[in-house]
Image 1 (cartoon, rainbow, N blue to C red):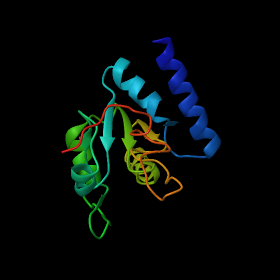
Image 2 (cartoon, helix red, strand yellow):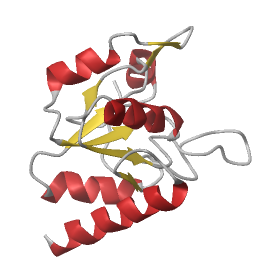
Image 3 (cartoon, rainbow, N blue to C red):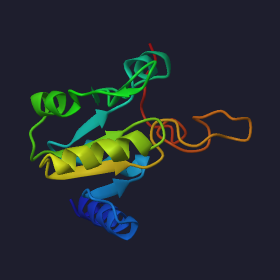
Length: 150
């Protein structure tokens, strides 16, 4: 449990330094470690269904679109769908393609009284490489963490 405490304290310090309104900011490897050792923690993947189907998904993550493909309009039922699938007091880690939508999701959830919300920096695919491709420089995939493709 000592490793869990250090990861959470570092994540909380990052969020504080960045002036973020939610509990903390995690790197993908830290998020994966927490999934392995922290009972009750949930990974919420807020990418679109199209991204989950075409790009890949993380086993056992809960998929709730924050924005829907192709117009990427905000899902008006996001918080209701989140409430239906997780407890408001459970630790939640939000993930998207690069960390932007998941930051928005963590903010929305925190404002709706979910008490322990974390954003996963770099997201599933991370930043673009020199050829303009994602998934090779940073993010969940580049860190070689478990994922699958349909």
